[in-house]
Amino acid sequence: MLSALRALLAPFWSYSRERTAAQRDAANRSASPLLIYVAAALFLVLSILVIDLHRDELRALGLAGGAERINPVLMSP
Image (cartoon, rainbow, N blue to C red; front, side):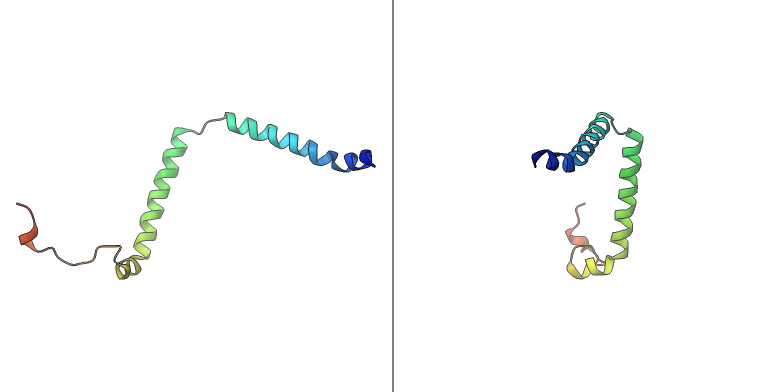
């Protein structure tokens, strides 16, 4: 009975070994600095677009500055 169970589970074990070998190979590779720079730049652009899209909601919550002017008396020389 144990050998029948082992025969049923053998494909899963071999798949697991192949997958861990693929993960080990992928872990040995480092990311390109250019790829990291491009990803960071795209994330920054996306963040700016999302903030611009939801500007009114952010102002209503008090998280974004509005068109209120600063009193000149409070400004430094």
